[in-house]
Image (cartoon, rainbow, N blue to C red; front, side):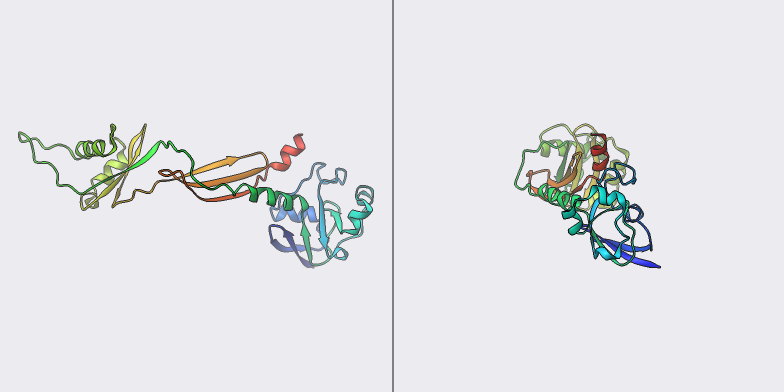
Length: 239
């Protein structure tokens, strides 16, 4: 017999076999939960809230020993001890707190100083120069010379991929945008006027992970997202 189990606050849900423990369900559904004692019912760190509580096996001796009367009244169970006997919604209190903490990481807004290693240089369409003394300047040198004038600093093109893109017919059909790395030189040649340059800033904390999409020209944060670090429980175990 199978029963549906849903975890909050992630809203992950699936069907599990009868008598599957909640902890076993979290493992099969990749739902992070603490298990400091390895599922032996000793640490009490895997406490969850089950609704309805009567769709679980009876309280084990470990649960009666670890959980307070108030927690039992509020339908707290130990995930490693409670076995599924009916459809169930399981709330992981620690993740509820983690979710609020992660949301707090996405409140950064505004503009910040930027000094990126990558810039974009837009070049207008120009006809190649006439040969001098019968010698025609090679295309890469001509484009690099124009880029230096626009950017105000040395620009070079040595990347094979960029050279191939530069030789494409579209590269001489109108404006082009050079993606220039301060150390590697031009790494890409994009047809058209494409000045927007974006970067991703990542905050990898022991408890939360956050990412920020930034405009590398203005320093404006355009979007952000955060989540709980799935390895958080291992850090807590080491402590």
